[in-house]
Amino acid sequence: MRAWIDEVKVFARDPGYEVVCNLGHGTLVRLDSNADPVWWPLAGRYNTHAVLRTLLGTGANTRYVCLHDYGNPESPLLEHLPLDGTSVRAGLVFPEGPLHAGQPRPAGSDSNRFCLGCHTTGQPPELGPEALLYDPSISAQDDPRRQPMQTPPRIFGNVPMSYFSTGNAVLDAPADGLPVDPFVIP
Image (tube, rainbow, N blue to C red):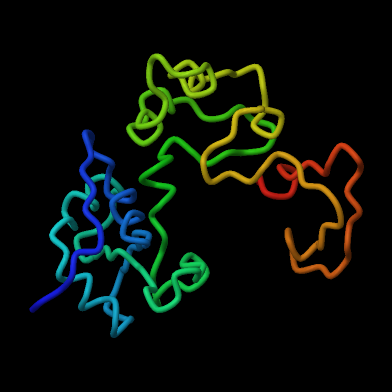
């Protein structure tokens, strides 16, 4: 087999399994059966199943694959999972989660390897380790801290309700913006 190497990156840290897959423009997906004729055999080529099964607490017949769509790099991968496939992204990058309305952000981010990849000593306060500390006094929907893949706290202008649900109405956001968290944090 011959191939071109487009890009070489060197990291001074272990980015973790999901981040490595993200660097390849994919996301890790768990397959629980051989139902998908394309991805199940491809997943058999990976050698990290045992480690991922331990990290995620899944069964011995589970396989993992770095799902990608190189033919359509803008494809929303999580909307087009293989048959019997489940995203494991949240379990790997935010195992202490998820966020819940009316409750504080979960404890544990201050020791989360994924979070500590950016939140390091010497950074401004919002990127320092102190930004990850558990704060039981503030609910997730009122917490100004945001995670990398979390939506902005407010959106402005005309907001189609299909942005949040299957409705067809259009909301006109107030001048100070429409809070997003009530729609997206369960």
